Image (cartoon, rainbow, N blue to C red; front, side):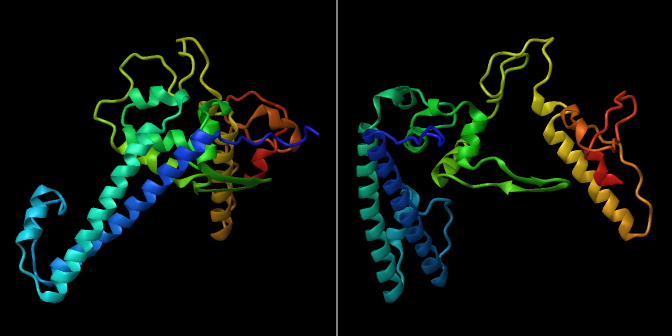
Length: 277
């Protein structure tokens, strides 16, 4: 009937790549749990580990030379055998992932963005799929659960941490890519490119709506602060002062109350100031 939005179904090649990526991520998590069990065994025997990576070249030599008790030695040997088996499976999946890239994402495989390696690029390509189905970066971030939670009803505003909806691997890959960015990777001085990837902004162009004091986010923030200030005044028996809040003129016809900043020059009624009466 055309009343519901069309659902997007990933093509078979992307679905297969997605299964490989998720299987590898699961095996890596299980391998990390096995490695974490080796450290308590060494601590119980009083073994000091001087290196940061116990399973690197230096750590492997240390484990080979240790003389542990029978029970502790058997468990460490068993864990090391399981870790070796997991290493082989993870390497096999890595080869399959490298060979299973879709043709439409070949650029990501050959030239991934800064901070994104082959593993993170495979995660992003497999989980996101067709990037063109999103209108822009805000829609992609909302789908991935990277946007803050915002619940608003009348004069009540509730904000919280990121929503964490959508695939968790995308959020993990985004955080890892941000942490691995090299120093000095920000935009060069004097650059006028938009941080969201849009057209460059000219010197005389107006600021975006999200940075304007008349935007809904700024109004909601000011309104919430005024409401909290009024509640604090009522709690201590004082008369709350009339807060000066800048509001969106599109909401001007909702209420006969208007608390505008000095020099605003607006005479239309505004609803958003009602919370601070």
